[in-house]
Image (cartoon, rainbow, N blue to C red; front, top):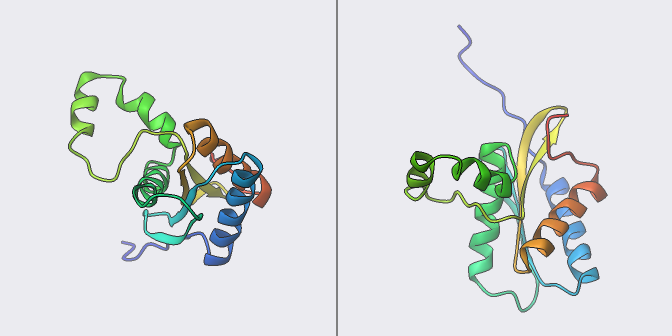
Length: 145
């Protein structure tokens, strides 16, 4: 019987690069965001809040990253799953930290989820665009393939 399990997580250097890429995209869209990167279990690795972004967006971005990392899917697609049946919808309301707002993406490396990125502060479209741009700019995938 195997008594330990190895876990692979996003590095702090990669997390910082992802955040800087997301911020660059936000600036290009004239948006202000908070960007959070978590490890595979949803623990914060890095965070940056642009000037002028209100406090609640830090928690929202963290929850988006947590949702993406722990469910291994985008926070937006988590909504589709949770709204598929009344039982899931009712059960979801009792869960902390999971969110259905767009802007959270899982981080996959060699088919393994190593973390999540969450963006909040702009419109949902801006948040999603900033998260997607960060992954593209830094060479990450948001799915196993």
